[in-house]
Image (cartoon, rainbow, N blue to C red; front, side, top):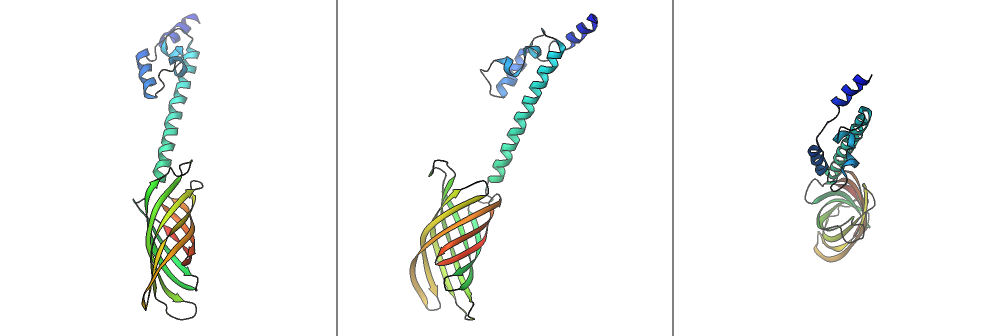
Length: 215
């Protein structure tokens, strides 16, 4: 029994030398944490029982695998949150207050990423685009073009849902030509499905309702 114990102890006395443990400690940026916190003395010096050797090495294995797993999860979340393009593209259908139907597009250009609210989860962007009104429930054939530019402030509620107010100007052009410049006021929301792909909705004026998607 004693002879077997000595053999087992001799096999486990020095799993890694102190210099190797110091290198592992530096990799995990734990300096100047005492070495014994991440590696019990049983793995550094051959003065304890084989059972304590085994227990200490199991703890170290859990620490290494846990750190690697957390790092991978964090990297995965950051990759999924990155937009597909430098600007956010939007395509939508439009309904005016007069009951006319059409479609439109936007390009949102971020100019400030975070910092306007204490949480830092906000965005200030310039949104440019146009709406084209082509149909009416009355059977008439309207033709209106509404180029627009707005300042859009996006506030994040959670990882999927954001909402935003916007304020800007919109020009009106119809069959009779130029009709003037008008304020563009809106309140919208986006529900993100993956990265910058989302479903969007907006309520405002001159477009009463806009529904579509962003990319």
